[in-house]
Amino acid sequence: MAARRLVNSLPRRKKYLILTAAVFAANLFLDRFTKYLAVRLLTGRGVIRLLGDSVLLYLTGNTGAFLSLGASWSPPVKYLVLLYLPLAVCAAALFHLIFFENRMGRIVIMASIAGGGVSNLLDRLFNNFEVIDFLNFGIGPLRTGVLNVADLSVTFGAIILCIGELAASRKKTAPAPALHDAAPRGTLAAMGTCIFCEIAAGRVPATKIFEDDEILAFHDTSPQAPVHVLVIPRAHRRNIFELDPAGDDGIAGRLLLRAAELARAQGCAEKGARFVINAGDDGGQTVDHLHIHVLGGRPLGWPPG
Ligand code: AMP
Ligand code: ZN
Image: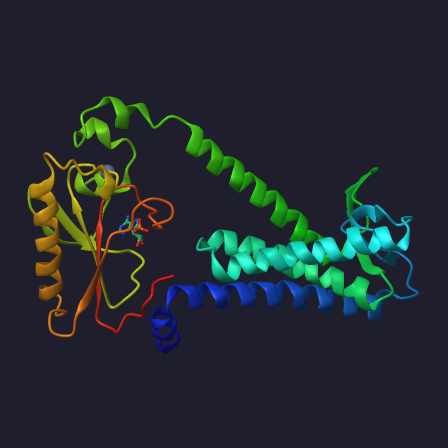
């Protein structure tokens, strides 16, 4: 509980930094440790067969890249392609994670790739360009090359990253769901599959603390502070940019006043609270239905991540 409170009290950027460092170190450590074990346990042992030959363990030194690509290149090319370039990529990835990335999934995947990548580069730097490989997977004649744990971090990380990017770019280029476009804003038909519209309609449960015919407030399921309440309009507006200056000024004002009123009711008026409206990708909005976060009950760090 105390640890959770401590983590919650850290500014977001620091949390992302800690996550980056922990995932990076875990992948690096796992690869170093398994390589250490492989050298200790597999040297001079030939091939160890596991699970009916689907996993083979044997020690090899790979002086090329993945699947021994480039093992016969001249030293300058090898240094450039297999050491300096990957080092620069890992450094760029870490720089991005430390200063810019704010999606947890991305941080875990990219830090895993960087951790695995750096571990293999350490082999190259300190082991005469030879990367320790000892894992081979396959069924019958269909087999992978000889790998190590870092290769798994890098390969699976890269695959997941690519799939994520593809899915995200599809989401961006796909036309908005017809329901949102075609139906009048704020009607049931306009709601599509919006989770907050579902809560407003009573089809998805939430711990409500206030509702009237146009506003709803409920506890956030992933509270970032002892008080973390979301205040939403019943009518669907994607975010603050979608408020209509001509017709939504009334509800905008009432939302703000209601948020203040609820913060007061939660005991935050005296010590203070924070009212946050995230909007769009850069704003860190994850639920596309306008909402005000009411946060309080502890001192909150600034600036935000
Ligand atoms: P934002 O990142 O500003 O879009 O905030 C969305 C917030 O909604 C996050 O803090 C989530 O934890 C919260 N949230 C998502 N789904 C639910 C839900 N079903 N009930 C309550 N809060 C939710
Ligand atoms: Zn909605």
